[in-house]
Length: 626
Image (tube, rainbow, N blue to C red; front, side, top):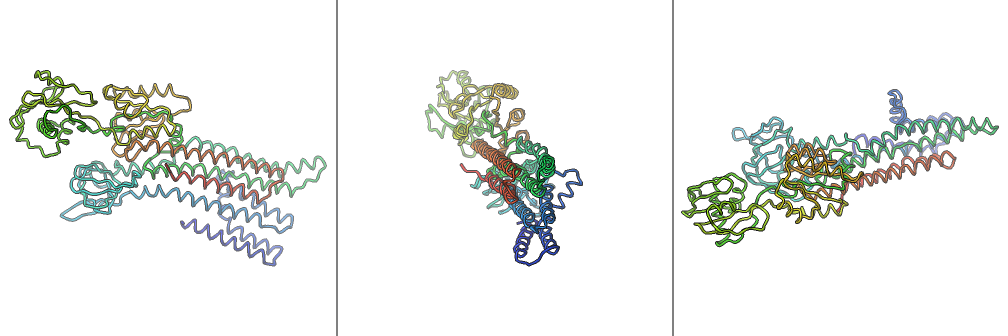
């Protein structure tokens, strides 16, 4: 508990003890009034102060004003009628403070997930100088500097591992419980915790542009973007509060005057009591507190699962996502070319890969790199001579004195070498050794392990249509879409074409359905902005995509999309439950009070009881279960 919460708890306990003691003290008249006023001020002085400030600042009609007016009115009635029954006014304030303490605790609980994210903020970076480590502010580290991260320390800046290997705890960023192993040459993002091993990292971004800074900025600013539900509550409160205050005045003054006009007993005490009870019942605390708390809990729960949602408006929009459009490369596929097959080879597969890797050793093309990676051994360039690149066709070279051709079908046709066509999807590297066809190697972009399951989960989550947009050839795109179970595919698109395709989909979608676009590259930023909901791959996605997106997936796993939609729908469901429940109870109790069928104790339940139930319901949004 925080200091402020502890003070409130002590005040509640002291007031409760005072009320119990006062029931047994044989005092009457002024001493009794002073004793009960003392108890009232112990529990209610802050409400009275806030009500006074609200009146002075022109914001009189809030819950503090209503509570102060109702409880002071109860004291006035007890004095007027000389009943000496001051308990009701104090009890209302006491239970209200209990409800406020409970709400404060619930908000604190929902903030824990956010606080866990804030713990990823690094305090320092280690720079090696004269053989010693010097701790400096991460803001002071220039791009390209070498920093040292020791076991147990947070990675302060994004970079590439220069030396060392270690396991990283990424749970605060991605929600993933399993550690991630990194070695020399691997990219590394700030905010992870080094579990073992010493790492030397060459920084690639300034602290202000690093992953940890962007995450903290997204989460800290999320609450400033209000949803339609929160906007409705704000508008509702502005109309509702003055209305109930006027209704209470009419109930306590106009009705007795009207009774007098018809020759009936005015019953001032009864009707003023009803008016004061009406004010207590009318406090819109359950709505004002539980709705923002539900969204706050939903955003906090999502961040715990590695899904950063930039505002409650985006959380609400995500719940209506019925069409999900994907970029292919880097989103559904890994965006890394790999050797996926070797066909029709007349020699050992490993030997054919060795010839291909050596022949391509002088090229920096991704295809060449994938061949060298598949070979898996150090390249001995002394074995390769007479390397010649045939533009648009491939490579010719001598490897260990053998004439090697590595390229496409055009290269084989150029040298009159019969070859076998390949029906696999990908880039095909035909190989010839000393004028004889030796087989072909298939290189393709590898589908992410969970992509197929992610599409299935989206459909189970209520997504009605999945679409894939890509610049790849139609044959490649159709094959990937078929394998993953995607409903529609648009291929051979330029970056500008993707925006046009999304525009068409938006124009043709149902009125209440939202379209979400998922991408990771710089060229996806315009589409992410145009979609109803832009979802970016955050771990390895481009800065431009993350900046343009409304939702960021911290571990690049497409499975997180269905999870994000389910979290948003659970949160919106809770919001709707709280709105309906609060309004039904509230208006029901107001009607009962107006007809004299509910007393001040019923008012306490209507106000504090409903608030506690609504808050309990709201904090369910913190937890996500499959």
